[in-house]
Image (tube, rainbow, N blue to C red; front, side):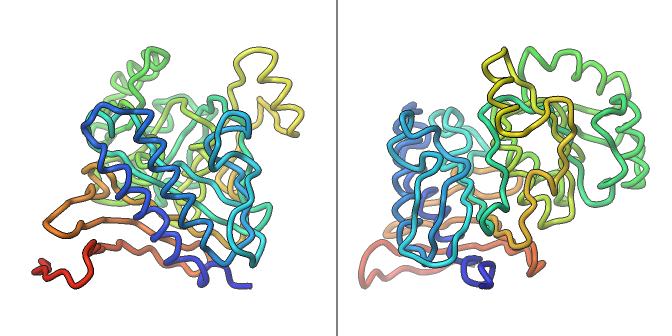
Length: 322
């Protein structure tokens, strides 16, 4: 079954629907409600798809999340697939009306996406020119020189995206001392990772630690685009370490793109909720709205930017703008 051709446009419909729902609460200061409406909207469309999908990355365990929980089965029947979702990546920034909130999904054949535990992961993300050349075990300065050489630039020309967290103070200092500039973000390392692999976004690498589930979502996109993510699980305490080892994972191993997203068929979609460097946010007009998405497939080797007009009223008369 060619699940990429079956689902490549359907996944766009999933993220568009979730973005439209979440964007209604953008800037309203209601973080929990933003996540709730995004999750409900995403589940609604996923339940309609011709798949037998199992959530491997979602809103948490069954006792933590009423919808899109890990292990939940979705769809109306069809090929067995794994589903990784983040209905609202950036609930806080959505609630505050800040840039770069997205809704995101990846689908692969069964076993094609790692069920990453909910813990931190040390990450290094680069675009296609530097893929296969850097290493999470190299010093920061060495990786920056490799990236600069691959991009035919100077280290001083590079911008490294890092989550603005106290734990990254040493990393930020090392990047700046090497001569590169730092772009600090408050949330949203999936969209940051995807941006690194796309020219024109002004981001050349992503470093630091963030959520392991988000690392798998990023790996799905980077695999489609030829970029690279390297990650190392960072369990916090004995309970997380025990859970990690029970899953057959190794806290010392560096996991690469294909380790996190081993699938031979992968589809990925992200839709902007609020405006960002990569994706426009949802824009409303009388009787409708406009969404902006990135959709891609690994085997089909196609990356699409989809600019969609949604008309809410039957028989609506709207002048469509280019």
